[in-house]
Amino acid sequence: MSESDEHMGVSEARANMTEVIAKVRLLGMPVVLTRREKPQAVLVSHPFYEQAKVDRKLVELLSEVDPDLHKTLLSQAAPKKPNPRVVRRQRDTSSDG
Image (cartoon, rainbow, N blue to C red):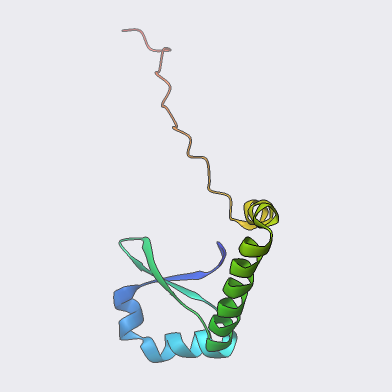
């Protein structure tokens, strides 16, 4: 999944489920379902899901056969979490007072 995935509230998806399923199935576009702007689940096409199961099994086998390679590859493939920076307001020192 990527930043460009479509995000949709659970209530909106429920109200428009036929259209949401068509978008996922026909266009292959994942839809991230959210509640209060927080991701809850993802709707993906059936072929994507089946491939994900195969990929998961391959990753499990790799971790058993070569744990070091698994760890290295996983660190390269895992999405980077943004480093939250605290933004501080600068005090206005230009006023007299």
